[in-house]
Length: 598
Image 1 (cartoon, one colour):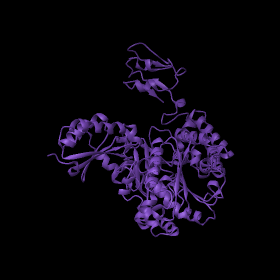
Image 2 (cartoon, helix red, strand yellow; image 1 turned 135 degrees about the vertical axis):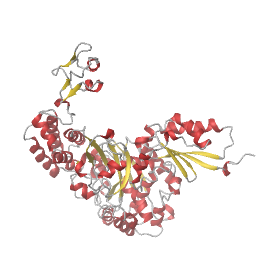
Image 3 (cartoon, helix red, strand yellow; image 1 turned 180 degrees about the vertical axis):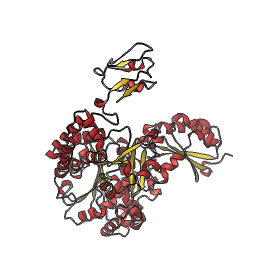
């Protein structure tokens, strides 16, 4: 007699389907596991049943596709899994009980997680984001039930204030204070808005939270709505996040289906509903008044404040706007208590912060760390150090609105006050690591290109000021810099910061000011010596052949698109600088390191 499935132990195969997992082939990996288990086990009477579970971002995106095989209390993690690996894992691990060592995680995986403290991301990698019951099973919606069973709105706000939670969208304004102001504001209708318009280059924190645990955002919005007296909320999310949008839509539908959204939630007199508004990808719509204008069907442009949205926001009604990460913290604070949350972090910066760790660091991915952790711990302990063991140069935090922090300040704590003190910001959570091959003038130019293109154009300081700043940086990188350009940049940055209408213009000078402060010698080299120390700005580079190394193989000549290289076979070649377009193709293809550059 064969053993019934209900009596067999359960083995679960978890596969990452966050954006990184999907890009690496997560869907195909799931299908491969399903096929493999069917092909191998159809005629076998196994002592287990196999289940497949989709999970959100696991964090270590550099090692996707990440796969867990969970057998009771035992969990084994595989990295870099391709569809063709599924057969071996099913046969050797699931059937024969021997994990496949070839793809097992290594020590760097543990190092990546050792100094993290996962609150928001803990469930992202363990529950199915498309199953509301999975969220409920790990305590989801317990916070909402708790407040509806006996907490007043004022008590909820008091708890959020006591927790010390500050807005994770960039400014770091105390969340409870914002809620309190909206609750006290007169108005026959009030709104809660989730800002999911994540536009910083290299940032994917909010996206990953929605993709991995959308119900935490919904529950956070419900609690906020109860606290301020709102019955309707909007999630403003960019259309370029298709997976996040679809999972959010599904989560809202599931919450409606079981009565967690709509009228008389949990049998109370509290009613709340949600709508989704797709943004078109304008960076300026991350600013709250521009976001409001976009929801209302107007062009996304900021307005002067005051009045602030908590007094006159969406449809001229009191409105609270929090970003995804802020709202996702709320259920955990209500569930575990304000004191628990306040015990994490620093005196003025409580809790954890999610960062997208990218750039020239070995271990790229999504991390969640306690506020107050040192920059060096993130880059070297979690990030594993610099790719190819090159020299660390700087880390850019806060996206286009942030600044570049040099190696001499690696002991800086990561919190709102400390980063502001050294000329940067926490921002929404972008963290880009730079090495010795990066030109800091070019980095400042890169971010100015972004902010200048994304300026809505409403105010003159931002519209014209960022354009002038970009023009100065461009001519410096072309070797056309003037002696007074550094002073001109400093003066113009100060004017743009003080006089711009919204945060986009007010913070646009940060990359310039921080790079001039810590890497002034690079600006001077570009202007006075007409040289780029990092050899990045191509107008300042000269390529030449080192004759004693050149074998005359002709590889550089074949690679040159401009025909600037000449020479006979097996004899040293020459590069004509008047024809050379400085593309670097010759430098890249030379096996004998006979092409130099200055």
